[in-house]
Image (cartoon, rainbow, N blue to C red; front, side, top):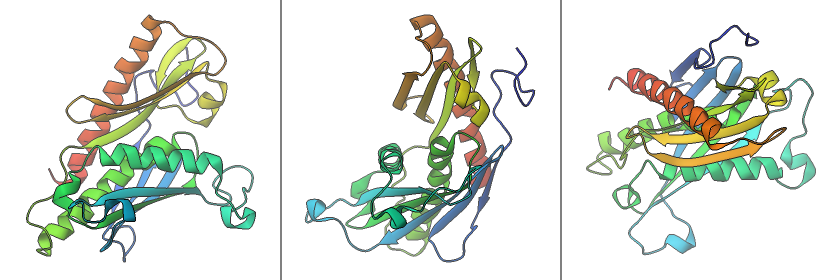
Length: 239
């Protein structure tokens, strides 16, 4: 099978991280995966939600949005509809869950880290790119807390990344672009740590069902992809 961009089934799209992309946040990154581009920022706030009061722990949460004309047609901003897009809510909850798997909230102390992921150009895999990019922004923000003597030790416990896998013309493929995702028989998003552990697996038979053999093939591809993303994260962070 020939993929749209000529990649082999187990290949990622071109991936780059640009750190300190925005001047003001404690951490900021532009992640580019193929033609998908997401700006991820990490903001430290010296307060916590009510349900965390007097717990001795901090909190980490996320917001996600797709800017108008990030896609082929202009989407409306959430504010113009006076409500959050259900898809955006689902994705930002995923980002928050994924990144909380990378941090010790007790070491963070009673403060909040807010991750903002804004898609400026979409060509598939925006939620997975948001997770992988937001981790780099989060890492930088935590390092800033340490360097400013706010906390003694970074609360980062492990690296986290995410990638899409699926089936296209009956074959398992890694890192789907929009055209592949649109026509995919099965679509999955897999979040993992650098220890090889799974944080979350979201899988749906869009146009076909799948058996255990095919599931194993897709998870193997996800492991390959996440391993490479984490290698790139460590490279850009100088680790």
